[in-house]
Structure formats: structure tokens, C-alpha cells
Image 1: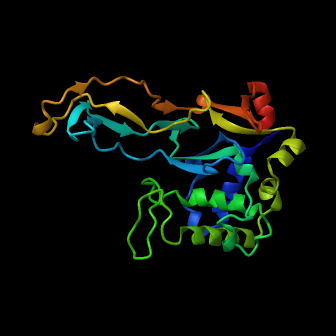
Image 2 (image 1 turned 90 degrees about the horizontal axis):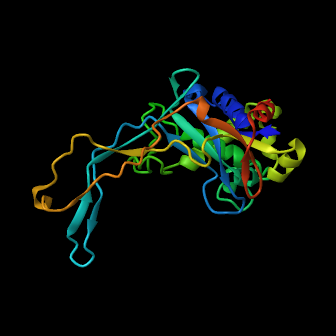
Length: 278
């Protein structure tokens, strides 16, 4: 069984060794994992999740009367925080890169918005390499969140948005990587769609978090010392905070290997998981 996320991680190490723009990335700070995504359905092929964002400014939820627009009630004050993910002892992971299987495996340049950027447009699998570099390019060199891109007027757009020449830069890095003559064995798995990989290797597996399909995400936490609201809203009832007990810390013990199929996935027992990663 092929472990797809392990192959992606190996590919990323090779990319950052060959593409100067991405050379600042240390893959020990990055964890690649898989999520389920049906082929042909809408949604992203991959996502960059930042774990080093500072807590958000304090805030609260509020409800308004539809007719008058007046606030009718509000929640207690809370802050939004990032969970901590540690691997290899106490080393904290700064970014998570998730890939949707099997959807990601079936990408092609044909009739996609990426096609116009490539002289190798006949090689449809390059769309998958583009996605890998696209997500790596989201990593901020200063490790202060998601990279902010410049617009044509020199201003910066919000993190996570693809402003300016983002897609052109990604395509340039894809060509730069391929022009560096990397070992074809490193990226050969990208040339096959999901069904071909499944048939060739007897299954497609990937690293996931348990309990699947959850994974580390930003969470809200009630502030122990509540702030004062604007005096004009002092009369508004305050809804007691409902404790959600979010996961705040993940380790290697929270990882598992799953086999992905066309319409579902299943956890691989620990013994078979080691064989799949080999």
C-alpha cells in the first residue's frame, strides 16, 4: 500500500532543496496529513493551516433584533487560539498541509485555470505538483502566519488570498523545479490517478489525525477575567459560556494511518500501518 502523505513529504523536501524561494522552509516544522474528499466534488485539493498565529483580540458573539437592529443578547468575552502540535519530542509544528484524497490524486491541467501557465500543458499531472508548491508558497518566511501577497498597486492583500502574481510565481517555481532535473522517482507517484495507484499498490493510505475526520484547528476559549462592554449595551443579557473542551495539544500519539477508497476510508491497524509506511 502506498503512503501518499509520506511521498508528498519526501517530494516537498526535494522541492525546497531545489527552489530558492522556498529554501527557508524546514520540513521539521511542517506536518502533511490527509483528509477525505470525493473526486468530482467541489472544494480545495489542499490547504495550508497555520499553527503559529497569536491569540486573536478578545471578542464576543451577539444577537440582534431583525426589526430594530438592536442587540438583544451577547456571549461572554473569549479569545481564539491555535492548538499546539508537537512531534519528535517537544518540537512544535508551525504549519499543517492537508491533502484531500482521492480528489487530489485525480487533478489534471486539462481545462483548469492552471493550464495556461505551463509549457508542459500536455503533462496533466503537473497540476498536482502545482498544488504542492502552491501550498508551500503560503508559508510565511517570517513564520507569522500565512504569507501576505502584494497586489499590483504595491498594497498587500489579506493572508490566504491569492493577490498579485501568486499563480504566476507558483508556475515559475514548478518549471524551475522540473528544470533542475530532479530524480523522477521522487515525483513519479504524481503521474498516476487514484485508481491507478490503488491498483498498482494494493491501496492508497495517508497519515491522519484521530478521531478522524477531526484535525487541529483554531479554538475559542472563555476569558477568565471578563471585560466591560460598551455602557450602552450594559443592559443586554449575557449568555453563559458553554464549555466545549476543545483539544489544545496534539502529539504523534494522535496520528494514525488510514486507507482511502473512492467513497470512504478506514483506519489501518498499527501493524499494517507500519507496513504501509514502508
